[in-house]
Image 1: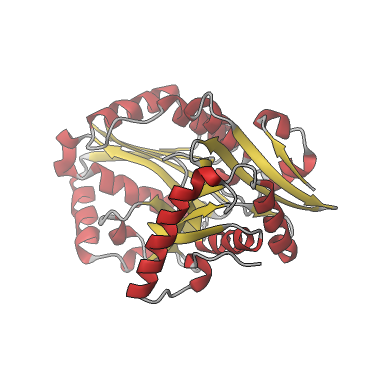
Image 2: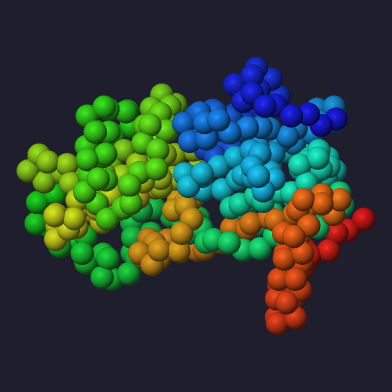
Length: 349
C-alpha cells in the first residue's frame, strides 16, 4: 500500500514513521521528520511538501519530496547534505522503493538530488522497474573523515605539515581564546550571525531556520557551537552537530579583519579534537562542495547523485525526456559508464 502525507506535522503522530524518521544511534539530521518540518515551514513556505510511503505489514519505506513545475523535487535545500529514501527493511527495499516510484506516476517526473550512491542506485533501479526512463549521475562531492578508531593525536599527526605548523604557531602566541558550547545561547548565536555577516560567505539563506535547528539540536544534546575570541570579541564561530556517530559540520565563518591570527583554523582544530576525543565519533562529514581547503582536514571523498526520471506517458515532460535521452546517449558514446545501473537512460520491465 502506498499513501501520501501532505501534512508533515500530522505524520509525526504515526508511530512507525516516528521510529523510521526519528533520532536514533544511526540517524542523520537530514532524514529526521522534525528537520523536515522546520525546513518546510521556514525555507519552503507555500510549497506542497509530502511523504510518499510504501507499507507492507511492518515493512515501511518513505521518500520525502515536494511538488514543483518540473515534477517531484527533493524535500531539501542548501542546508541539506543529502536527500534519500529510507526503509526499515533492507531486504525488502527493492519492492518497497518500486512501490514508491509507482506512487509518483501521476506526477510524471522526478528530479531528486543530492543523493548518496547506494540510495541513488537502488531508487534508480526501482524507477526503471516501475516503467520510468531516466538517469542518476554524479552531481557533487562529499568530503568525509573516517576515524577508524584513531584518537585526535593520531589523526592530527597525519595532517599536512603546513596546517599543523599554523596551529602550533598561532596557539603559542596566545592571542586567540577558544570555547565549545553544547547549550544554545542567544548571545553566542548573535555573535555567530555578526561574524557571518563580516565573513567571505554569501548572505545567509534563511537565518530563522538555522537558529530553530540549532535550538532543537541543543535541546537534544547534539549541538557543538565553537566560538573564537580575541580580547573578548568573538571573531570566528562554527556550528556543528553530533548524531549517529557522525559529527556534521553545518556552518563556519570568521571575521576577515582578524584573519592574520587564523581564528577559524584554530577553532576547527579544537572542534575536531572535541568530537573525536570526547564525543568519540567514527565519522566527520563536511557536507557537499569540493572546496580545496576541505582536503587539509578530510581524507576521503564520495560522490552525490542527481536522479532525473520521467514517465513515458507524461506528455508534458516529453521535451525534457528527449533532451535527457539524447544527452545520455551522447555521453555513453564518448565514454563507458563505470556504473551502468546509475546512468542507463532506458526503462526496465
